[in-house]
Amino acid sequence: MKILILLDKNFDIDRKKLKEFLLSNCKHLEFSIFEKPFEITDSILSKPKSFNEIHKKYSSEFKEHERVFCFTDIQYSDNYFIHEHKNLSIFSFAYWELLTDLPKSNGLIYFITDYLALDTDTSGFRHEKTTGCIYDFLGDKRGIDAGMRQAGLCPNCLKRVSELISNDETEGIFEDIKILMNILSSSSKWNKDIFETVKVGTSTILKKRKLKSESGVSVVIASPGDTQQERQLLLDTLERRFRIDNHEKHCGLRIMVSGWEDLASQNGYAQDVINSDLIKNADFVIAVFKHKLGSPTYDQATGVQRAESGTAEELLQALDNSDSQNPVGMAYFFSTAPVVSLDTPNFDKIADEWKKLNEFKTKISTKLIYKPYTEPNELLNTVLKDLEKNIVTYISK
Image 1: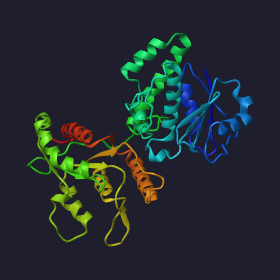
Image 2 (image 1 turned 180 degrees about the horizontal axis):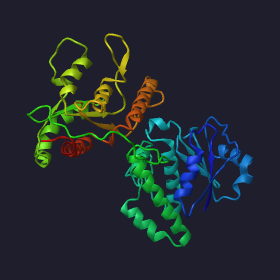
Image 3 (image 1 turned 90 degrees about the horizontal axis):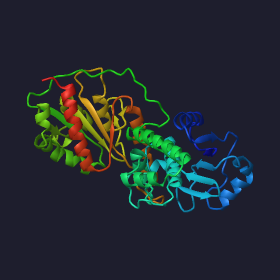
């Protein structure tokens, strides 16, 4: 199958990497990138008007291709992701940053696999609920995040489609689809750009260290103000669950969980007190983020900003390998963008906070492996397993 890809003038994606990625991973699908200047002039996409205008200008370029995929940031009048007319499909990435923190490159590959998967399945089946299967309907556009991270086929859909395939060409296309989905899922789960090759860095490997207290492993929970539910769950149940779920038995050490709530009311800049009384004495710092980073911290003598937020400062101390006395850092980020209407009074503020959080994630991405979570109980279970592993790895008895 020959597929032509059109990239709107202002659609920010690396053409060279896109071409190399598709060429390297597709044996049966034949992609080509439209190299001539291309721009959609509509401020809002509509069917068939927007499609007819593109066909009128470029129809001669489309004849050699069975499918033409166009990618743009312009919004549809009905706010859908995709519409199709003749052999042209236009995919809209409008307000992408509010739906996910994954890059558009991952979204582009998702839309390609989604379209081709539907084209392969003649039954027309779609999951009404978001399951992570490529055949999800995505009536709620926020499901795009889970779709990219889980990118795959549920057992029922795999069985159905496999039985529908009737020729070698379709079977080959389906094999390419599965390869693309596997790469997409692997990269998205770790918040990586699908076009980027994972390289082994030269970061310092942490050495084992002794406990700072004979009573057990000191664990500090760090989080901004929009994580009250997650924070309370960790403070109230992490220590008990670590014991009754046998994590304590497996690693041979008990944990002691604390947060700023355990500090007495006292004089001094709050962040300095937290640093000296909690972070300095911690073996592990567990940072949890949802939709915002928090308020910046400042040097009290000079007024210069120290860190993007209190939680950021606490985590960054843990990631500073220059001092072996610093705690080990662990970080978890909510996987879905904030859900807001465009007419929400504080829309710009919410979008700005989300942007700052994503910039911070990028900043620390070379310093630790952070993980996504979708709801508080999933976070708790992930932290329990990770904490046991890290205690075994980094704490000497």
